[in-house]
Length: 137
Image 1 (cartoon, helix red, strand yellow):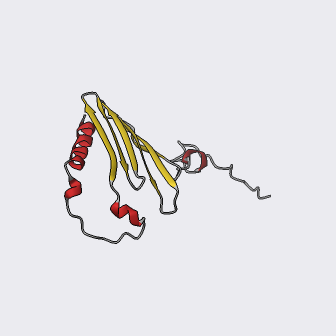
Image 2 (cartoon, one colour):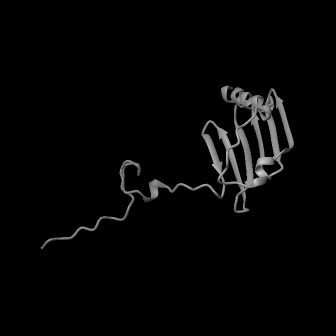
Image 3 (cartoon, one colour):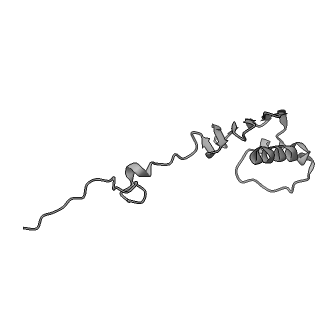
């Protein structure tokens, strides 16, 4: 329930007109010049007792969509166009298992259980190649 309240607090602050607060002009080393003049093309939010749905589309191709349930579970995605012109999309789930993003631009962790000879990470048994024992005759 606390996550649910926090999400709505953040959405409320965003909807309260944060765009009207003057921001200092800071040069952005990465990005496109049209990002400075980006405008919200569409915004929708539906807050209900059993959850919420929200989406945002900005003129510079930034998109965001999310939905949440009464248990505080949130599913969503956001996307943008990279400075190289590539479409980047991140999908995520935030639930009792934490924040779980998925996207082609995100690094994928390797499985330490299958590759680490350490007993601490391998569940008590080494998993690397068998050691070579040389007999001394």
